[in-house]
Length: 345
Image 1 (tube, helix red, strand yellow):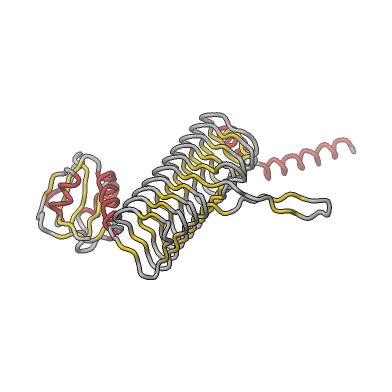
Image 2 (cartoon, helix red, strand yellow):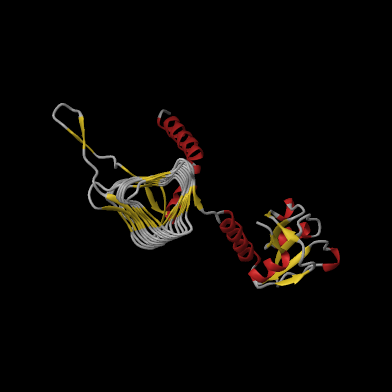
């Protein structure tokens, strides 16, 4: 998609300084700008790049005190440069996904219902009784199982698999390779010390405005539903087990895992490589530092770190002592040696 600088200024409701007819066809960092690119400056630490950038236009904040005599690019002046650039990132992303039509190599069962302005890519299979809303984009090699529903404006990138009876809300984005609705890890030992599979007959419910990263897996419930509430953001390579519930607007970073039946509250922030055992209750507004191991319930508003995790303030104090252990060990050994020498005299 190509935009004139004048049009971008109107989208951002900003003030244009320069030639509004210049065309923009890409976005870039200010230090990597090239002809036809749009960049931004939100931190005066990088101001020097404003005078050397090759970008055709730069979004800057209105409170910046700059030397206009040194500027050779066009400017779009807004209240918040970072938010303005984020708006343009979203605009370019939406224009990239502005495609429609059904590829001839896709397969759609007759009982499926497809909304208006949808895109169905090559080698997509849509099963019986699937309901797909308006403006949904399903990229190549996706699978949609029976009796699944997908809300308006949702995007499924290449290779996404959604199993039977799952419900996906509106305005969701599911990245390549994600699997939603696979069996939960349910096995029961028998008298011969073997494991018998426990049937997983529930589903997964993903509410509106959820983003799910590449190769993330969300298991269906044994009974009932695994639920991802509205506004949740899941990074790549996350495992969400059966019957887990994640509260509204919680974010989880990559390579984390949540075991079965744990309930996570709203507005939580969970770092990368966090492991949470099953059947726990994590409160609202909880923050969990990266690589922590969670083995017990966490109350509202707590910040924890460590494995097993505990209060982050206690963790930081304990870590100070931990780093001193080699010195303390040497001191103890020296004292022990001196005491033995005194006792042996």
